[in-house]
Image 1: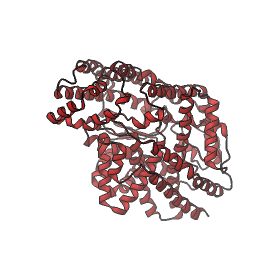
Image 2 (image 1 turned 60 degrees about the horizontal axis):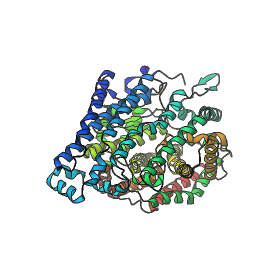
Image 3 (image 1 turned 60 degrees about the vertical axis):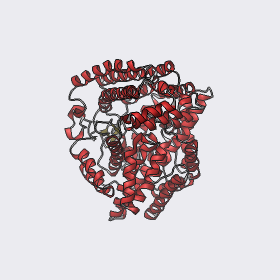
Image 4 (image 1 turned 120 degrees about the vertical axis):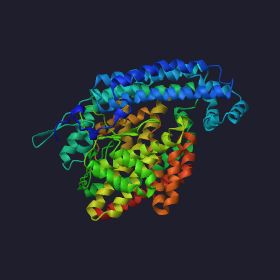
Length: 606
């Protein structure tokens, strides 16, 4: 492994097509200035929304279109920063764009309080007389359910204005983690292997235990050097959300997180959250059995660095080599049960439109994500290694991107996003469908085991790590809401305890470095997000099985689910596809899939 290239040295085909957003920084800056001027365009409607349906419609459409334009400016800057976090120009651009978005949000803060002041019968009359306004029916109805928590126009304006400084904790953590953090290289046979956010995944599946151990320790120690800074930023983020929940008269931060989405309320019952955690804890013996089998297969010892919580467990067999382009073709084949309506635009995005940024370079941040807006490509960020794990990541992010593609193509701006609660369904669905094809086609036990290893990596992250983090997160918010504090020693010790419970005594623990794992997850800056990974993988595997067993009818239901966006509540969207998350049954089905794979693992490794 040689030194990573600079961003400017990457081949074009390994980078995403940001020129489709803005052809140059100069064009971006012109758009930034236009977005700043647009702040004044949303103000004249204040105090007048009840005058006529046409005026209400004009106000909503003006705000939506101007915010969409501003968010495109922000997206261009943030996507550039993700690929080159040490570039001060991109950091400055993100700050400038965020400031404009914040000002625009503050200028439009009167909208929801004023809409809520319009009598319901008047709104109904408006929608009857102006068909274009009827599109907003679900939004209006969802807004009514949040009425007790919407503050006055003045308070809403303040909350919008402080969203930037309140969100600064995540930005500080991002800068510390992706720009300032340094990691000592790993030495193997006289060769220095660089440790970075974009290389750590490859190093952790290295065939040499010594390399895995050294890389894991280097990565953990790099984070531990910032433990007090990152504890302070996490505490600030938790306090910020708790402050907003109190200001909006929610009983707790969790209550607000379950109720609120980016556009319409999520309306998730508390029982869904509680069912997930209870079902997870009841099924910990399945994980204990998995670790026990794995430890035996690895010669009787299993260490923290063999099962990193932010990446895949060390493989029992080497992953077959697969290039990015081979993986893209394989994924397209795996998704054929959904038909050409799904596969054709996905293939175009992979091979023609350059949705994916997959090259490794200096300054590129860790992780993978899908990002976009109505009218843009559904961009994918990742760092590629030639193995099944990278193919799994690509399939996962393509699931997000195709969900976004269909939602944005089908829905108007107001509903052109979807709840985080259902986001992880589409991503895990792709992995499940592609994996099923690979298992059917497996010609040797070794290849089948390699595919199962990818599956276990997926389930390990979504049905082990994320529920454990959800338990951890709930304790953090409870502690803050009771007047406590979050310190680095507490965070490290408590997370290590929770994972020790999950390992069931089968893993030899380096508690300090294991407990530092909370610093690896930016997800914790999105309150009560992590539990949704577990509900997502459970629903996804059930839906994938339905498509494979029922064919076109189930595929059609699934595509209709992808197109729903925020036009319905997330649990209702899942019902379109055929899943009811009100009961613990879908999560139990997820653990049944895991149990069956553990059975197969035991047969293969003896």
